[in-house]
Length: 185
Image (cartoon, rainbow, N blue to C red; front, side, top):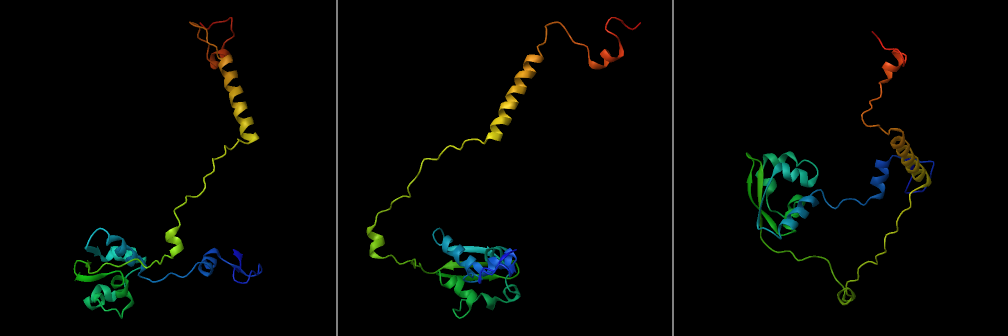
């Protein structure tokens, strides 16, 4: 829960999901994913075949049932919002197969980019962001002390376990069962 972002009142609480909806800008269109995909593909090809499942994944939700049942839904009329998604970027529907569940888009025109550049933008050369040399982080005192203790323990183990060649120490259970000068018969 976070405070109300619109009024700043900490007594009114929102869940994070609701706060994200309030703060984030609304999406442009339901079919903007399809639009951006077709715009991207226009650089490579003039014909795109998409299954209905792929179109569903591009738009982020299911197509309406009429898209699965009626070929007229896929008509290239600019009055329909879903048709503007592909018409605005220079594509038209060439073929729809409802039985096999795919649609074929054909590129009919090139679309110029809509970004406007001012004269100042064109004159200025590209300047990369200033780069700073990364500073080495020093380990914390806790990590240093743990590492130091670990090294000391390893040194102790090495010095304690100096094995003498040819001598095999008795296992601990033998030491407990028999006295060192007695042997079982």
